[in-house]
Length: 178
Image (cartoon, rainbow, N blue to C red; front, top):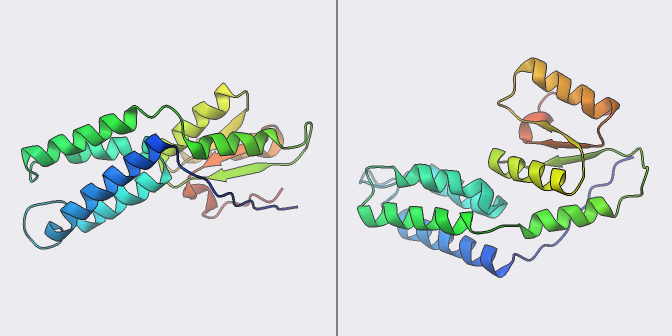
């Protein structure tokens, strides 16, 4: 039995402020992108915006990396460092809290399996810690794992762990119907 769930989530004020600040940076950098002039590529800016939509935890590593880009002005690099610090100050995610609420609502002792996909590895790492702290055990699957580790992860999910946390890599060629 499959049951997909869509939940509307409202960002916390801190998350909303962070997302809006990242969006403002992307809007200000966009005119220079892809023009052959100095600046960030449009792909980098699009990725940054998608990460910000995923979670602050998925965004801060990219902000730090972009802040080291020498083609940017000192003020742009400082803005990126400030945005990373703002992202670091966010302790919890409204999405993470909604996920915990969904998991706690599952029937106790259920044999059901739960698969949670996320696009970004840093968001996956945040969710792994969040679930551990809430007492949930999960298998964690991502593209940086070796083939043997991926196989072991899927086997653990099939036989003993109720939750699979994964990046989109798990959706590529894996049979998760057991």
